[in-house]
Picture 1 (cartoon, rainbow, N blue to C red):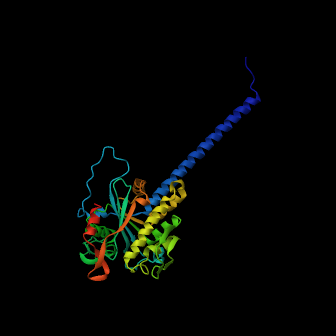
Picture 2: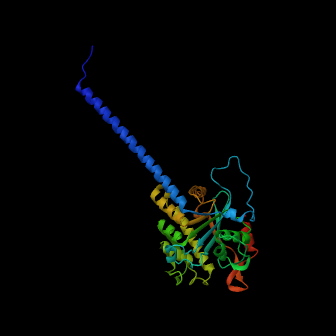
Picture 3: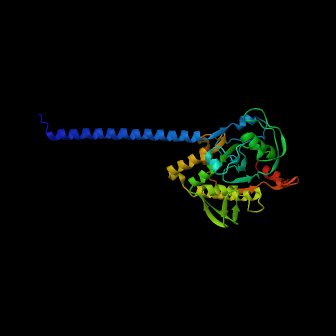
Length: 349
C-alpha cells in the first residue's frame, strides 16, 4: 500500500537541503579562514626571519679560535639545548638610516661597538653571567679578515671598540676571543634604533638612578630616583657617561647593567604568549634591528634559544664588569687587571 507524499515531507527535505548547503558554506568558510590564517602566519614567519641580518663568522674565522668545550651527549638529552653557551652582544652606534642618525649614531666613517657584553648561559640555562667590556680598554687587536677582502694589521694598545670599526662583527668576535681565550658560540648586535623601538614595544622600562644625571652629550637629565623611560630616554641612559661618577665609560657600564636587569624584569612581567599581536610587534621590533651569526639568523633558531631560557629569571642573572685598571700609558684608558680578569674568563670556559 502506497501512501501519498505530503507537502510537509517536501518542506522537510528542503530544510535538510538548506542545512546541508549551510554546513558546506560554513565548512568552506572555515577552511578558507584556516588557509588565510596559515598564509598570514607563513608570511609573518618569513617577514621576521627576513628582518635578521646574518654574518658567517665561523667561516670567516676558520679554525684559528679557542676550542669548543667538549660535551658528552646523553641518550635522553632534552629537545631544547641546555649546554653552556657564550654570546657576544654588541650595541653599535651605526649611523645607517635616518632614525639611527637622529638618535645620535656615529659619524659617517663607520659604526663602532658602543656597548659590549659577553653573556654566559650556564649549563641547564637557569643562571647567567653578563660581563661588560669597557670600550676604552686597550687591547692587542689581532689581524682580522676584512669584509671587502684582505686582512687588517695586528695592532697593539688599540681601543677595544676599534675592532668593530675596522673589521665589523668578525673582528669584534676575534678580538674578544683573543683577549679572553673564550670561544664565542654566537654573536648578537642591535643598533640604536632597534634598542629604542624594543623598549617602546615593551611599554617602556623602569629604572632607579642613584644620582642626578645631566649629560649634554646624551641630552639626558634625570633626578636621582625611579623613572619609567620610553625608548629614546632609555637609549640616552645607556649612552650616558658625562656627569656621573668620574665621567668615564666605567660609570656608563653601571647604568647599562641596570637597564639589562630592568629589561629582563619588564619582559618577564608581560605574558606575551597570551597577546599574539603584542608578541608579533615585539618580535618584529627585535628582529628588524638585529644582526647575528648564521647560527642564529633565523626565527626558528632564535625561538629555540629563547625557549631554552624559560627557566632563567632576572634574579638568576649576574652582571659584572671585566676587572680593569687605569692604563699606565694613558689615564683616559684602561687595561685588564690581572690575574682577576683571567680568572673571570676562565670561569666562563
